Length: 450
Image (cartoon, rainbow, N blue to C red; front, side, top):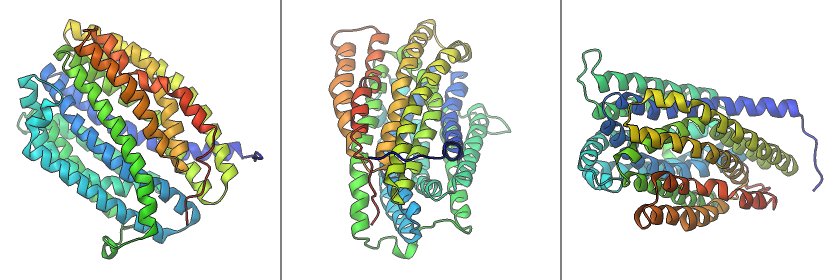
């Protein structure tokens, strides 16, 4: 291929325009988990740990919803680049159908079998009871978030990133305020502790959904066509499933695998579970930058490929892949710098505090792989529809290496907690060479529109 020259100033401006608000949105969403952990950490260690374990159910749900909205984002970015708004509306309808059905199943499970769900993550009766109470209330939020995520996906790919971020960030701020009110019983509200965190989440998601629907009624926005919500869309539906199913496979491999990591640490004792819960919150906060750039990458690369500018899309992908390494090392430094601060905020036992220090050091190096893979796989490769690779890499690196090692270390060889935790961080770092080989084959350089 002949390389094309690009306007670096325009490239950087477009990247910042997309990545900054999306990173901020990701940060605000992560702040909810951080708020739960910090506030409940001021109540008791068990309250904090139970909610952290219970939210793994939402994490698994988010993997299903991500596969649906991810497929919508891949096709939507290319069709928006082509200027086909009618097809974008049809993509919106398809996303809604699948997302609502999946969210309703998880809602029913939380309402009918919350104790069984908690038993997956811990054998501690106190944590099971607290977590089940949380899930019965928080389950209502799952119904609403599935719909609002579809609205926000369409806003991002159709050049309405700013209102999307304002809605999401506003909902997060309300969630944190509601957390303080209902967890501690401020402003005359009852002191509900972990149940208060669940109620706060449900109220915030309700307001978020209302705002998404209201804002999308404005001019220039893509809206679902309710008259054709269940209409057959032929080839478009097949194209959607062609992107969605590999994404769902990859999401489930990653989501269930990550949940398995949490379950393994949860069965190694309450101190290990507590330290892992805090480190997970820090990880999600620090990952916001690479998540934002990864999403922006998919949009930028997808727009160019959808316009037929294949060589320009390839050059964009190369620049963004290179940038991911810089983000990884910056994230490493941030984790190490905030470790003393985090240890001084959260109330933990001495043993849990020792575990947390070691986990933060290990996680700092994990962040390099996480950033590189997020931008390269979820941004560049997915932007061109190369969605199968993510599933293959997760199957090998996570399910054939990291998880078996962690299971054997925890339950067969009785390895130290930090050694088991290190096993759970192997997959992201270990697959970097494989990712780079796949990237350089340039199978992702293709136009998916019809």
